[in-house]
Image (cartoon, rainbow, N blue to C red; front, top):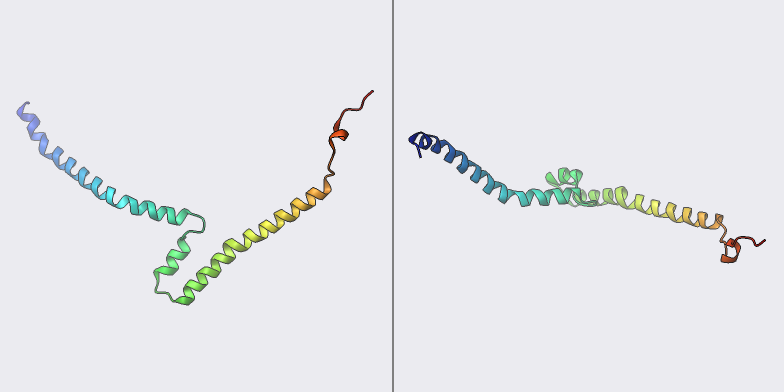
Length: 109
């Protein structure tokens, strides 16, 4: 190699060493970030509200309020939606007459 190439080597080595250090830190931190992402995006998981409320010193009343919030926000609409779906399915089933196989045959003639 020419001597001019060796003069460019130290800055390149510094950049490569920095990139290796960044990669090692990223490799160690990434699982925690992925875990936090999964917890916050799973329905029923810890959301922003829970994180903010539980970041402050809380008591049993805080936990109770969060549980009541979850029940009102998730369970009540689920139950109401299930009831509405069941009632509409029953009404639709009663409105449509059941046809028999012999009624569906084409008329002879």
